[in-house]
Image 1: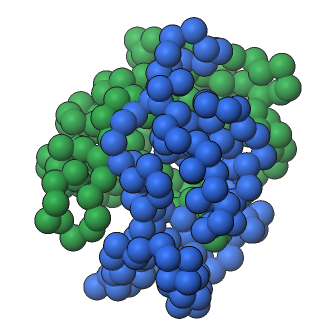
Image 2: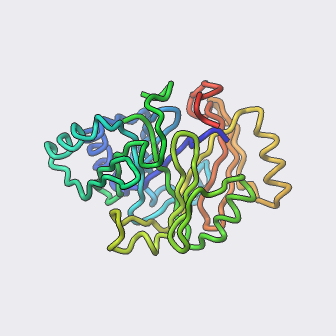
Length: 138
Length: 138
């Protein structure tokens, strides 16, 4: 196995999700199906938002799945981007639920998407990952 | 943002999850907290399994989260590994719920973890990603 190819969150209101992820995080879906999913490319993988009420129904082309309640995803940012992200979120009126300077290194900004998922912008140092640049990621 | 840093699934029975992910996928946690989480390193990020009954409780160090019901994660494999993974899963008695040869390219093997999460081993071609090797991922 060479890494994570698909990372998923769930949101029943996909239009609100699309608006939020676009406006706040600059993510534009490369594919979407009304009422079912939004797909975003992300580095060497994809970030998928599904409506659990659609994907939990038997009969689709792939095995059913679909969770309810707040999930969690962290997006990687660089240390010198933390201040600009904090300002960006603040300017957009997105409440920063928590900002952490981890004792062991690294920084995190936590906020919520409209579905209540816990989103995090975090530096790789949070996990002891020091690599500054990863080829192929942008 | 430079990619996904944290990908999460939820499982109430973490001991069963640890046994399964170790035996079937060869993943060994680099950190764990009984009753709360298992953390795995994965390429340039981490794969986290949380007990939603623990992480959904207010009062921790980080914002609450915790979903119920089957989530989904896909792990990236190479095309020449599909046969050996199918055999490996079969040898271990892990039911392959579905195998897909996508019309647009790429192959997927779907199965379940003990918590019912939908796991997928998929080639990057599923998403039109052709890169064979990513520096830094192993």
